[in-house]
Image (cartoon, rainbow, N blue to C red; front, side, top):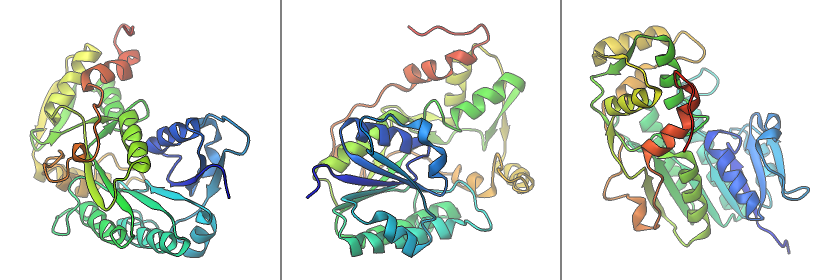
Length: 311
C-alpha cells in the first residue's frame, strides 16, 4: 500500500495547473503532470522530495496512452480546455471526446474522485460552440460516480492572457475596444484562489456537484479596463465596437494561428460571466477570495509609467 496518494493533473503545466500542482506538492502528495508538452515545464514546480512528481507527455484523445498514464491514480483533475478551434484539436475533440476518454479510464481504473474544469455559461442551447461543447463535456463527467465540476469566471494572475493582454495593449495603443459596449458582467477571481478552492474540493466530501467560482465583486468589462488603466496611471479612450463589427473583425483575425479574438468569443461576450445562485461554490465551501483591486495592483505594478512599488 502506498503511503501517499497519487494525483494526476491533466493540463497540469498550464496557467491554473501550475498553482494547483505546487499546493499539492507542498502538502506531500505525489503528482503526475500530464499534457501534450509536459516535459517542457520542469522549471515551474518546486521539488520537496525526489520523485514526487512526473512530467508525462500524453494526448488525452489517445485512450490507450491515457489509460497507461493514469494507472495508479487516486484522484484525477482535468484542466484541459481550448480558447479557439484548431483543425487537429477542435472544441468537440477536447471538450467532449477527450473528456469521454478521461471518464471511461477513471471508471475502469476505479479512480476515487474526478474534478473537471468547465466554464460558466456551459449550455447545450448556446450559440457559442465553446459553451455547447463545455456542456457536452459536463454530461460525460456526470457518468462518473464521484465527480465535481468547477465553472470559473474569468481567472487572472501573473501569467494570465486577459489582464496582461489589455495592460500591454494599453502601453502602445491610444484606445482600447469595448466589444458590445463593455457592459457584460464578470466576477474575476485570482488564480491562487482558484487553486486553493480546487484543492479544498479535492480533500473534502463534495461530490456530484457543479460549482461556479468567482471573486467577491462583480464588474462590467468596461470597469475592469478602467481599474486597470487607473493602476497603470494611463489615460486611454475606450471605444465601443458593436457586436456585428466585432464579428467581422474576428473573422479576419481567425486567419492567424493564435487569434486575438474569434467569432465564437464575440458570441460568448454577449452573456454575463458571473456565479448563479443555483451553483454558487459557497454552498459547498467557506472561502474568501482576495480583492480584485489589491491583486491587480500587484500584478501590473511593474508596467506602470514610472515603475511601481508594492505596499
